[in-house]
Length: 250
View (cartoon, one colour):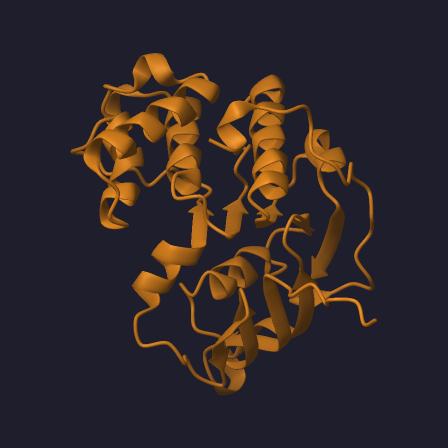
């Protein structure tokens, strides 16, 4: 009896991205091929300018590649051109993105910055607010849920942004230096939550990081240099989720 094949959540094949033309051309990504399966937490590492954020933005359908193929959750979304007419809806339905900087809406408080994602997805206001409160409490910023972005510290604002990215239980979570503004204990709280979400919700998570204190939280780490992947990914992490937390499977 044939075994059922597990479908990758993210497939990138021969992906390249360049900026400019002629002598001014810069090859930001060169022939990138990688696969991430549901439940995996993958790290992207490399020196500044190696292409990590560019790759993340291409996978997130924020930045258009120059060539190659991107398949997300079984759907080919890019093959030499975008194949989906509504990329905004695609991102809303399938992708949670944690930016390096919070990018919170300045006219909304912390709770509303999280619940707006659920409002857009069609959740009832009470359910959206409850989910926002649970995530903010776990990330130890619940007491600041009514504060506006200008009233938050850098670390508080980033934790609100992380809660926003996780709110809709996306199948794909992409994070660009999500722990950079956080101290070590809170950084590990964030990574523990990401691992738990990966396991319970079968989500694929890709994290750009320079933080060596969280490397044991990854299943595999890809190294980029000058826009190219260096060899095969290394396996360094837990491979299992930490102890249960009710937020992972509400």
